[in-house]
Length: 243
Image 1 (spheres, rainbow, N blue to C red):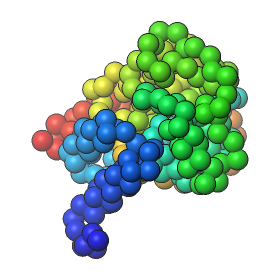
Image 2: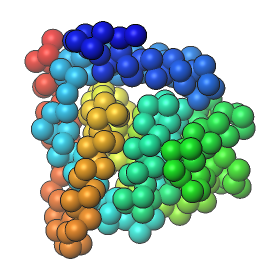
Image 3: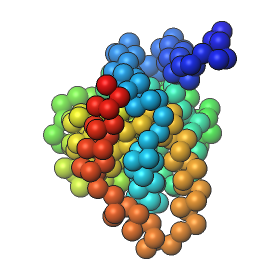
């Protein structure tokens, strides 16, 4: 039982969710290490959504609402931490949900798909489809289901760099959620949200409710005015300041 007044209560709750996800077969041990690396950057950012991250979240939602076939690609950590919010975002932006894993197994794919369906998803791709091969990547993440193959915009929370680079090379606009502004994922993505995934997805749901009422030309202005290089430089300055 975590003390209610613990100064880092939310951070500890996230850790417990991941441990629970590990026990349930959603998360791998390597996934815990990956989270720890991100948590270090979040600590330096004050464990809060910074103004530039909020702008990135707004631009990301605008891009998803403008897309003809947006997709949200989900891994084990994402499913363990915010399945309900991911399903909600998919509904608000009319996006398909796809399970895609680095440490891939049919059993684990099925468990993550089941978790998303328990959270309200009616259909989850990737787990039982007929995947195609994404060029330029050697890991198991090269296998992608039809919706991602046909997509024009992809949200890849907690992504690895080679797949982000391959998706961009395939002509897709990629939205990444990555607390490390120096990573290859962050630098190769079209829009990088330097924020904790639990805050980012919750924020994007609130933003989607507002932006869904706007005309396409307003959405395009929001998306086009975003500069990812400027965004990453700002995030890096904030992290240096946190040191």
